[in-house]
Length: 295
Image (cartoon, rainbow, N blue to C red; front, side, top):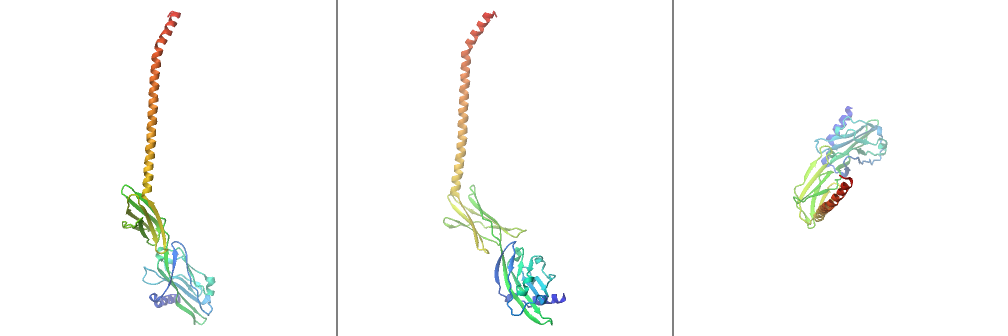
C-alpha cells in the first residue's frame, strides 16, 4: 500500500497538465461515456505486473484527483476521489490487449470541462520498468443535455410575449425575432436546478398587433436550436371569433326566451277570453239544471 501511495504522489508531482493537449468528447448528463485509451507498444502487457491510474483535473479542485486505480493487476480504489465512487469501470479482460479505456457513469454537471488522463507503469519480475507513460489519452469532457421545446405565451393585456424552456445544460442563448429581424427582449432569467444542475430559462419581449414572433433556444455544446413561433394576429382573430360566437349564443338564448314569453302571454290572454265567453253559458246550464231539479 505504501508503494501504491508513493507512486500516486509521484504521478501528481510529475504531471504538468498545462503542457498537455487533449481531445474533446461530449457526454449527455445522466448517461455514461467512454474515455478511449489504447496502448501502442510492442512489449506485451502483463496485467499482473501492471499499475494503472486514471486521473482527473477538476475545475474546482487545486490538485489532480485519482479516478480509478489498478495495482499489480488488482483494482484498488482506496486513493479514489469520493466524487467518482461507484461511477468508474475498466475492462480487466482487455488489459492484455492494451485496452485501458475507462467507462465513466452517471455524468454530472461537475464533470463538465474536466480533463482526464492516464498513467501506467509495468515492471518485470525484477522490478525493471518495461512500459511507462505518465500522460496518456488526455480527454476533456463537456457535459450537455437538450432543452425542452420552448413554450411561448402571449399576454394581450400588457402586450408581452413570454418564452420558457427547461431541463437543459449548459446555459443556452435565447433570441427573439419577428418578420423584420431581431427583437430586444428583457434580460433572460436563468435558474439552475439545485438537484439535477440543469438550467431553466425565461424571457419576455414587447409585442404589437399582427406580429409573428419566434423564440429560439440554442445549446452551445450540442449545437442544437429549438424554436417556437406564435402569431398575435391569428390569436386575436381566434379571440374575436370566440367572443362573437359567445355573443351569438347569448343573443339566440335571449330571443328564444322572449318568444317563449310572448307565446305564454298570448296563451294566458286567450284562456281569459274563453273563460268570459263561457260565463253566460254556464249560468244558463246551471239554471236549467236547477229548474229541472227544483233547486
